[in-house]
Image 1 (cartoon, rainbow, N blue to C red):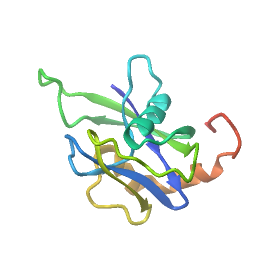
Image 2 (image 1 turned 180 degrees about the vertical axis):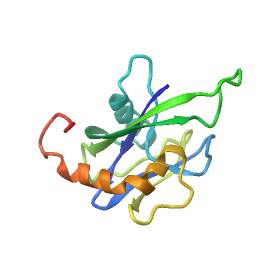
Image 3 (image 1 turned 60 degrees about the vertical axis):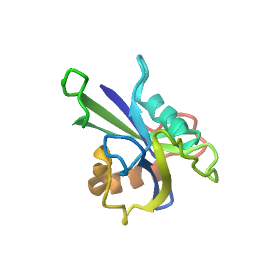
Length: 150
């Protein structure tokens, strides 16, 4: 199943949300989730950011896609294979503060890319390997442009 994930950077800090539901209850994650029927992963990343953190933003760069198996299987026990597409998302209002959606998110915080919490949820593990890629792509986007830089 396709997923869209939003990497929101503010200088050398990244927005992480603490999960309020399984899988990975209590772990930190970037905003994101499954695509709706016919939805592009980029739009899912933007939508999930709004739903989970109350923030509006627009994808400005494509980071990559990772394959994974979701921790909770379908009701019949079939594993859910995912394609997680990750985007750098620039906030419409850089001064806006995240507002947690209590059913899915118990807390929100900004973390230095060099000091991420140990309890990261599933796809967020890529930060430990690819923080340079995220930072470089975020800095290379062209301000004022309405379209992503991929």
